[in-house]
Image (tube, rainbow, N blue to C red; front, side):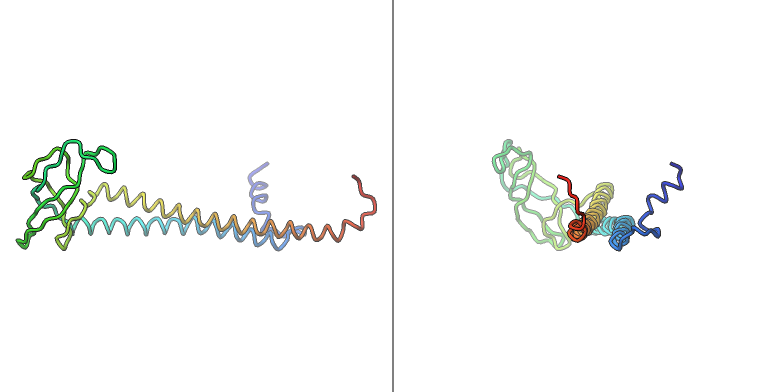
Length: 193
């Protein structure tokens, strides 16, 4: 089979054909729409999501800053959390804000530390405890993963909607064939069986 024949075979739904049904044309448009949504919509969704995530991570890096805090309680070497051994445990700390206010709160710190030890914590723009912002490399990787997930999510939704529409068309065609057979079948005098 040469390339021209293959192309004609793939595009059979678009050609004029006495056996082509209206549902075949609708199915062809559904397949085309799904592929356009996957290609164009998936790329756009991925790019927009990745860009938004990268902007959010850049804002976190700009707003958050690290400060030194003092550990107010001992943290044992084998601290447990929910029945599992961890290298981090919740402990009470105290730090001074850039305004000179002293605050206390609880945060996760490394185990096997004594009260009075110095730990580094991260604060947001209001001076509240926050998680450490991702590095530019970590942010780029996470933004890429989020963008890919958005593109795949849109593609999956489009394929699912297309498959559902095609399934409905198939059911409709089968029902139509059944109704037509009910009309034609009795006219056939001789039945085997």
